[in-house]
Amino acid sequence: MTAILETDIPLEKMPLERYVPPAKPSLVGMSRTALAEALGAVGVAPGQQKMRVQQLWHWIYVRGAQDFDQMSSVSKDLRAVLDTHYTLARPEVVAEQISVDGTRKWLLRLPGEVAGERAHEVECVYIPESDRGTLCVSSQVGCTLNCSFCHTGTQRLVRNLTPEEIVGQVMVARDRLGDFIGMARAQGPGLPTEGERCVSNIVMMGMGEPLYNFEAVRDALGVVQDGDGLAISRRRITLSTSGVVPMIERAGAEIGVMLAISLHAVRNDLRDKLVPLNRKYPIEELLAACRNYPGLSNARRITFEYVMLKGVNDSLADAKALVRLLSGIPAKINLIPFNPWPGSQYECSDWEQIEKFSEIVFNAGYASPVRTPRGRDILAACGQLKSETEKLTARERMALRAMAMTD
Ligand code: SAH
Ligand code: SF4
Image 1 (cartoon, rainbow, N blue to C red):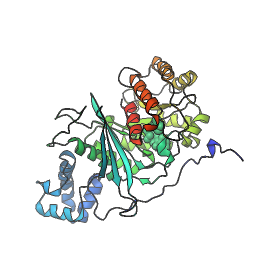
Image 2 (cartoon, rainbow, N blue to C red):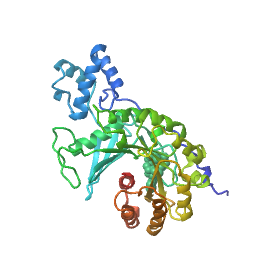
Image 3 (cartoon, rainbow, N blue to C red):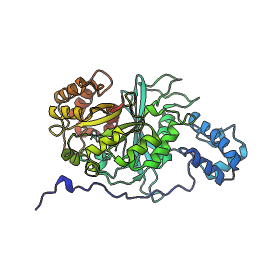
Image 4 (cartoon, protein in one colour):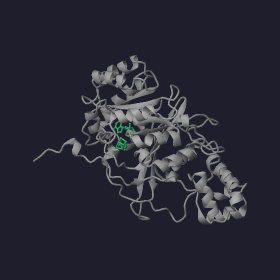
């Protein structure tokens, strides 16, 4: 019998399910244009739409309104019309977990294709730190790509998330944290005092490949960035991609957020196995797209993510090659300890090896891969992983990935 070669793994899976919008859509997460259209559809005159959008955005994104009746600056009649046709619903929270360090995870239920059946679930993770609070957001349920070290990659894709569902993750986090004006702040470790924002940073590092759901991610991040919307600056939003080369320039031009590239290998033969999309867009093309990323500068560096896989990509020769490969690109390097999952074929590199690797990267002038004393977070995460390996849930893996990312 012929052994199955790694390269026989299909590069992409087919999406399985379509999205069927609910009969009564939510206005939360709609772009200004979509919201103006939604207002037009219920009889708001074109000349009034812009002003109404502005009013509704204030209630939705600054005040966190969950009920049209709260919108005291909107006429009673219009509130009643809106209530007949639309909702202010967010994704349904089916579970919330709070860790001792303050990390919070929400399991969210989204409607499936068949109403009332086969609901889909995504997770959203909040990590409070002394100077920021980072929310790790998903762009798809599952992922069509098959990166061999990623658990999400082993799931069949269910579907792309809509802009409303992507923004909805931020709304849920802010609801639960009491992060809207006039709301009581949630209690728990690590949360900032009232008056300061809980969610200050966003990383598109949850489930899915954001550049395979380009329009929805663009529109959602438009609402997140908008000064009258969720008002999180583009410098505080990071989009992570496995390397969808043709979309990278568009991402810079149309979304304009910070870019992270899941590099993970310095040679095409290895990257072909780790990130099969590399067979379509090899390292040279990926790095050329990075060099051309609109707005790239020393102040706006690209983060290169590199998952530490024992005996696979963690040699010191690899570290030196990594530094050489990125020379000339304003870059940060983020070493991520591999988070094992049941059935995964890799192990996390030993801590000593990560430290030596990190030393080479650091001595070459790259910012420390993690924020607090160099490497300490990696050790913490990696040590934790060693003892907890099989116990880690998908949520915990996501939290650890996002923690490694918050720089
Ligand atoms: N699809 C996008 C974003 C989501 S994955 C991407 O691939 O970039 C976010 C990051 O977590 C990526 O760098 C990804 O390679 C990394 N990752 C995936 N599985 C991992 C695991 N088991 N351990 C550590 N990092 C992992
Ligand atoms: Fe998809 Fe990213 Fe996982 Fe690859 S690493 S399978 S692109 S989520």
